[in-house]
Image (cartoon, rainbow, N blue to C red; front, side, top):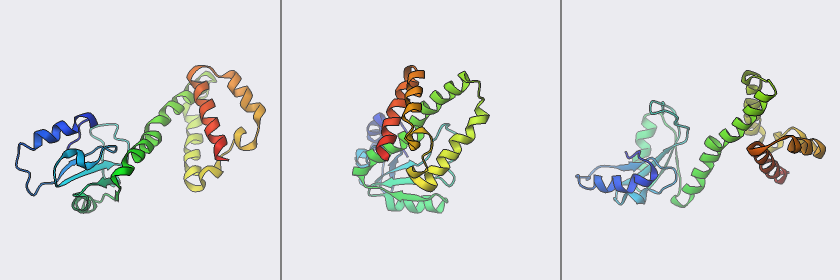
Length: 185
């Protein structure tokens, strides 16, 4: 199971080829790269569909997205361990992984920008955490129709006042995401 950065997977697989690999599954954990990068017959990729922020993070009950010729055998192992699996086509992996980055990483820029603005307004994180959590819950229950706020109401004047008040990255984030939200309607 190769868990190196993506740019080192092929080299690590090359090193493994020095050893007997008969009856062995060789797997990498990249969400972006196909199993064929391993250059072996019994290859698979197994990407955990979660944010692994620590080497000690639990992967119990985490869904794994599998791909490659050895994916069916690997699926049996993960299912036996209690992990759900989803099989993906190699050509869909880069879009899947971009979605993972958007949902699991890029939101940090948005949250940090909001945290900075709340701090300037003297609102503690405990007070606005529920807003973020409820928005996520609403999205999963209702999709984009759960949108609230000035964009949902068509309140252009408030949006203009927001943009005028914001500076730097917060302004760029607000403007770009507001345009994207406007396209959802």
